[in-house]
Length: 222
Image (cartoon, rainbow, N blue to C red; front, side, top):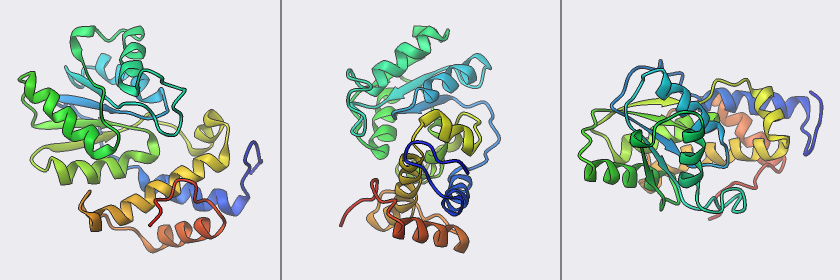
């Protein structure tokens, strides 16, 4: 493994790849009543949402998210606003998009988007959550907790781990994010934020090793 900005070792790459694979749900994409593009620092979310809209997988698309706490300068008018603009540039009609500009966490992304859809009279039996690749499992577990009556399909731009590392350009930051999301998968059920997810032993071991190696910038502190 080559080390770029914030480089990682071969062993750290292997551990991170194991967690990367675990975070992805592997759902078969199918038509849904609505899609929710979850706010993030990554324009890959609205780009893939636009691609899936053009493929006819949903008629309505909600972008959700306020200011990004990790990269506040990246989307100064809020994630949802910038995501909507990017989707419009990619051919999604304005009539198909709704914006939820206030959410500051994944639970709010989903509950406030549900409120927007309720207010618009959109009936939802199946929802597609479009997220960053390493965020699929946490989004799924959160949605099953706060919106249990709907079927959930998780989607993210199809991307290999190495390609994502190159796209972000900071290997340590990516591993920090993978570890941080796994901590939330593990801890959020106890806090009432998400349903329980089985974490295989090898994934948990990889997580522990990366934590001990200092990949803890995205860890929730007690």
